[in-house]
Amino acid sequence: MEWLMGLPAGHVTAVPGLSRTAQLKALGNGVVPQQATTALTHLVALAARGDGTSGVAA
Image (cartoon, rainbow, N blue to C red; front, side, top):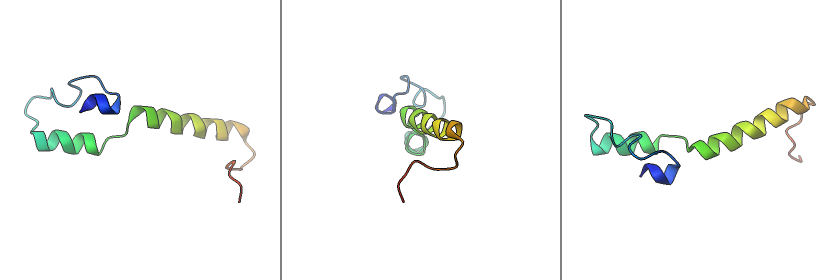
């Protein structure tokens, strides 16, 4: 299931002692790295503008 989130194989499923339920819970509560990267890139660009606007029309 890790590959669906862009994580390396075994990132969660190879953790010793972690039940299948716990693995799915951990993966389900995780942030997909690609989404986080996009969000942070967007936020940094907005902060760099420094004009206090969100870039979204009201």
